[in-house]
Image (tube, rainbow, N blue to C red):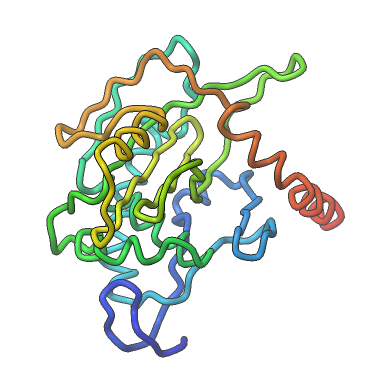
Length: 252
């Protein structure tokens, strides 16, 4: 293990490996073997990890967030939602927020983008401060699509940036998707100003509903589809995915 400053608490010591996607998810979804890294523009078959987290943060504080998220998998995340389904999504507001931010922060560091936006949120992620007003999260539902007569289900997991035309440097947009559940993370830079109109435009462009402190979201009247929200990424990176699949088939 290497020595260094922990990206969360800042303490100097031995650093450990923190998984982008927790081990409980990888065990439940072994078929999701492909992992895309935007930093090197490549698809991997292994687990994506960062190596800059101290053992106390990794094995205690952040592990507790992963444990909470695992409890949402069976009742919610594992099920593909169809057009007529109505789901009441119940969650612990702060634990879910902190887990999604932790996962997004790890992904941001892995890809070398948006890290500065997460720095003011670290105390909240560690559970030592209240949620800052600079962050909000919206949840959208993605339905299966029928393409060329074939039903394509949103069986994927991604954590990445969202590119929004016209968005200025004062805002960071990222998402975490687990099958039908698509979480948009919106973070504003407290050192830069934006107008109310700019912020309203961002929230009106993003789909879904705001996660609220009452810990309950009624999911119905879904309109987003796999083809609309997932295929653009896979088509844009088709070469990288095809190269991985070709190598995978040779080994298996």
